[in-house]
Image: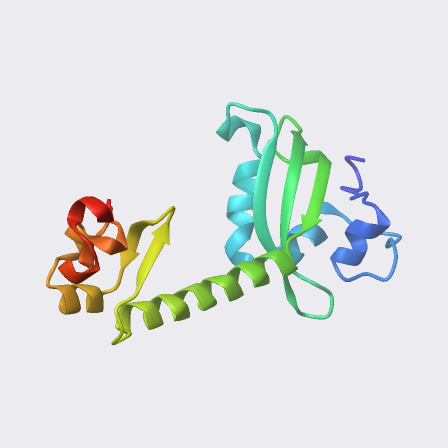
Length: 171
């Protein structure tokens, strides 16, 4: 409704924003006040069809729940503007990405931690895929004398001593 700037949403949507039910009055201005200040401009830009070839938008943004916690959301839809460039109507879906973003951040921390252990281990470590070395740490080069670039792409048996077989047998 243009005159009231009313914002209609499902119970699930409003619960994601931190409401216990669908509020009697809620408008686009209130919605944008809940969007994280660093994301307001980008979300508004994404919604504006004059900035895109497609009439629809997709945007990941943060918002403040009523209890003050920050959450992540993915919104996809279409904004309808009046002749003055003000959003008149918004249609779309919104998904809560908070748990997914937290999981991705935890995985990145874990990955970085394991990468640091791999890179700094005193033992030589080689990662294999189908019996071919796809990565190794610096200790492999220190132990074998081969630079990492020469190690990658070889089979581990390449480093076996002659007592263990001939190079032809190691292929």
